[in-house]
Image (cartoon, rainbow, N blue to C red):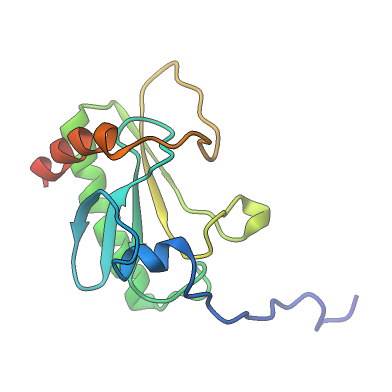
Length: 148
């Protein structure tokens, strides 16, 4: 294998991905927090009650494409929202997950953090497969927003 075949060839960012559409307001979400650089919202296929996603508003597929400023903003929001999730839901632990590339399990090509409340005895998979409705998500989201 030569040195060029092992290098990642950057692909253009796909602005039609679901998170880009959520950021632009084209698809609704159950919003937890928003500022000029980031957005946090409930995952519609939650692995646990209180599963929140944090995305930067910058066009970036993964951690390698995100600017240092975008990464700093995303981490600050992730920390802020994670504290609110912990306090609102009184969970003894939190799992933070950030996947890069399909081989790692990334299913939406826009960088994002998962904030997943954890309690003992609950086994998790990387991605839940069942969608839940706004009626399930909104009461949990209201608790988290109140804890911000």
